[in-house]
Amino acid sequence: MDFINRNHLIAVVLVMLLASLVSYVIRRYLTKFLDKSTDHLKVDPTRYNFLKNGTTAIIMGSALAFAFYAIPSLRSLGATLFAGAGIAAAILAFASQQAMSNVINGIFLVIFKPFRVGDVIKIGTDHFGIVEDITLRHTIIKSFENRRIIMPNAVIGNETIINSNIKDEKICRFIEFGISYDSNYDLAKSIIQEEAIKHPDFIDNRNEEQIKNGDHPLVVRMISHGDFSIGLRAYFWVEGPIKAMYAHFDLLESVKKRFDAEGIEIPFPYRTIVYKNDLKNKK
Image (cartoon, rainbow, N blue to C red):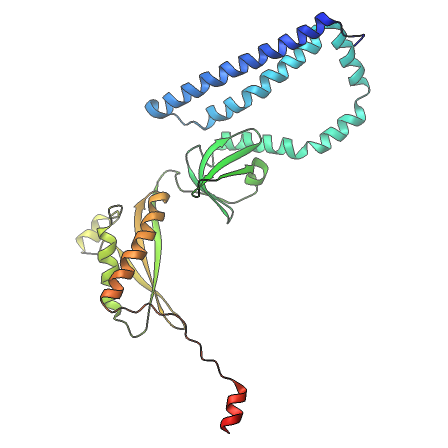
């Protein structure tokens, strides 16, 4: 403490406290502005959220640099540390590669916008949910189990992203059913169509020519002849991935009830087990 007197130490503390206060005020202002703008002006919150999350790091880093520059004793200390920091800098650079990769990928996410705050996305094969926030280091995704998935931006940058909200939010949900070979195919198809068009979220996506030709609003096709069932697929149009998910569940339930009521069998595999000892005894 010989090279830093009490006044200089107090000055450093005051500078850092002031920086913390400024950072807090700016974050509060940006949060309020973001809430109002999103509701009334339809402003995309992604860039503002990223700016808000980066504000603290920028202000605190600037305050620390100012303290080293403005206070003579700290300035000489900084020069001494800088002169002997070659090896430490190399170690730090190696250790911070992943951190810098996250920051750079976070900037790319904000600039190129493969997704925005509020979008429903699927990353890779496992992670599906709503984007809540994009920070310098990571992206926060709210899953449909109300859990938060914290994904480093560098990981997201290397994954395939499925965005359900870019340009057109309508989704054609594939809903599949299996019926037995003995069941009435035409009846099963009509049941699926009737139950689908009754659903409040169903969208009639036919064009004018299809309407003129009298095509049914819901397309149902036979897609497979399985080992024990015939596969049917309904092409169900709905507004948005969340409604699509719940409509899928609703239709599975309502169609199952209609199938049961009208004698359409949903098959399951049968297995016949043969014991060799029994065969020998019969002989």
